[in-house]
Amino acid sequence: MAKSDTRKRLLQAGIRVFMRKGYEGGGITTILSEAGMPKGSFYNLFPSKEEFACATLDAYIETFAQLRADTLLDSAMIPRMRLMSWLNGHREYIERDPEATGCLAGIIGQTSSVNSEKIRQKLLSFFSCWERDLINVFNDAQHAQTLSPVMSPESAAKLLIHSYEGVMVRIRIEGSTNPYDFLTQTLPDILFAEPATGCDFKPC
Image 1 (cartoon, helix red, strand yellow):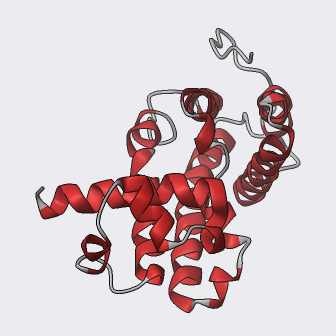
Image 2: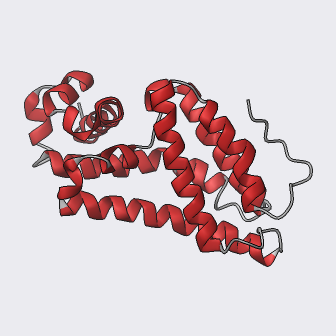
């Protein structure tokens, strides 16, 4: 197996294991078992679990790169539709792979892994990039006078991220996507000044 294929296989296994068991519960032996790979294949590519966790976060982010490009970064759509399409895309991801319920950055960030400065910086970069994308969406909404007058682009982005992360926790606890549906049905009306017309977003 090519080295790049081995790396990809290990990272995908790492995402699944960390999502299910968290950083501390996801031991290297468990990850190797999930990937069906021998022990030597791990240490040939990653010098430590810390390095592996950072690479796993990068791979997780890449999973959503196309969705990000097609929604948040698509300035041809009005801001509300960009956000709704992004939320809808994440819901489809959850439905397609129930084991993927949650946010990997949030799951790893709630463990002692944040005592690692390298992992902490990777997480900060993850959230900063996400917040920057959302601020751009809400900046466009503000210029179009469709952002809620009680919101700034920065506060709207923070509110969405905090709400999303909380909802991911509730979904894992309840074993239901109802909290996500509540988010998608209520938050856009809080963030934007008026409902979009011709919206094809359909909460389940």
